Amino acid sequence: MARILVTEKIGAEGLAALQAEHNVDVRLDLTPELLCEILPEYDALVVRSQTKVTAEVLSRGTRLKVVGRAGTGVDNIDVDAATRAGILVVNAPASNSVAVAELTIGMLLALARQIPQAHLSMREGKWDRNRFMGWEVRGKTLGLIGFGRIGAEVARRARAMEMTVLAYDPFISQERAQQLGVQAVPLDTLLREADVVSLHTPLIEATRNLLNAERLAQMKRGAYLINAARGGIIDEAALYAALESGQIAGAALDVWAQEPPRDNPLVSHPRVIALPHLGASTSEAQALTAADVAEGVLDALAGRTPRYAVNAPFVAPEAWQVVAPYVQLGRILARLASQLVRDPARAYELVYSGELATQPTEPIRLATLAGLLEGTSEERVTPVNAGLLARERGLTISERKQPEAGRYAALLELRVTTSSGETHTFGGTAVQDEPHIVQVDGYWLDLVPSQSMLFTFHQDRPGLIGHVGTILGAADINISSMHVGRLAPRGQAMMVLTVDEPVPPDVIAKIEAETKIERAFAVQL
Image 1 (cartoon, one colour):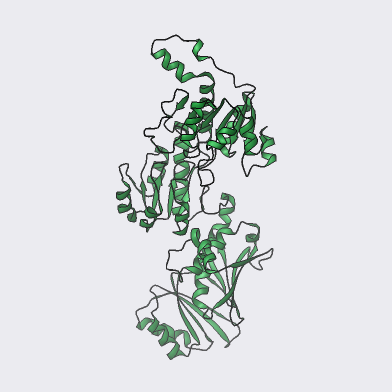
Image 2: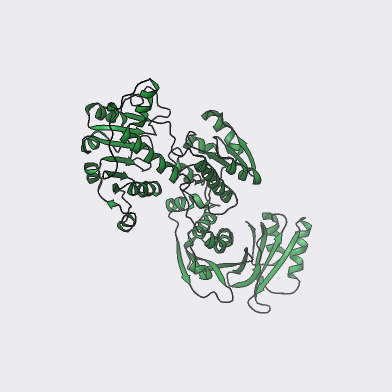
């Protein structure tokens, strides 16, 4: 069982799912220093928005396989550092879309009718109806900066209230916009034409202070601003100045550059509705968020591809059922090739045949790269960082797909071309979801790989197998299974022994010397 550290409160359903399979420690009192101190003891870390998972924190997570963010944004996690360290990052991007969208509409209506201000006035014993004259959202133009899941949900609700909706997103398609009755426009057009601008974009360097003094000045005078996305997208000092000048008539802010905000004049400004980051704070959203992030963490710990992996390719569940054993097999073939091929490799090729040729293969390629790099890199190598490390070393794998797999329903082959021009082929398939090695350099066999194996290449002759067994027995190495293949009777042959203990170099040397075996290899997977 793995150990999971949860540093912020998550929904009971998600927590129960984690506890059902692993040991879970909930620590809501951790300082950054204490988090770094205890993190080496854990395989997984689950956070929300307050815990800062920096490069320094990640460097202490020597056992970490996955960081789960119970929410949408991952700006509190250094994803690049996690990727380099081979740590998977998962989140729950779909679970709070409706909650944030409904809050956005709530803030829109609150701005339009000054609901919070009127409530406070009533609490003070006043009956000031003329002071709180509002405006109708019907017929107004709403500009959405960012048109992902949440932006789309806001658009649906705004359209139902008879608003015109403009959207700016670098990746929005005209087809997607048209489906929802939205006009896709440049940012300058949106700012100039919208009566209300609402932010739904992540906080990255390109969006930090996106709405600065210059862009606020581009907005229609007397327009309104809503931010339920991330603090830091708005230049808060510039917004305060725009409110004071009347350029911006009002703002509703659920997120802040610093949370909680300290000595921030926007909090007490009479035309600002200030909320304490409530976007995902509904019981329904919290239950879905916790369940989704728990599912992602459990998938990562089990070696499956999580549905919402931030730094790894996604494979649909139905495809994953076919691909999963070949992900493991790709690493096995790579480890096998790196230990059996003595000459420097010039090129690698993966060949996907039969049923495998119709499936997504990126996870297989990354697992194969990880297997090739494991013995050569001082850094921890996983499929998460294998692509990055391979690029830095100039290591590439070409890929080819073919419809026929001969006697197999599906076949995965790794072909290694050496500097001398020789090509070595290693192949495998899946039998009842279990990886099997079926080809090693021209020899066909059916081998369930073991952690420790002995490979020999030799001339087939009587008594050789018994002699090798005697040498291993004298070294107290137990043989668990044997597989043999040959090209012709008394011709070139290969033997594979799966053993319970690794075969040390001195025993390999003895086997080669005393049996006249051409080549012997101790393989560790």
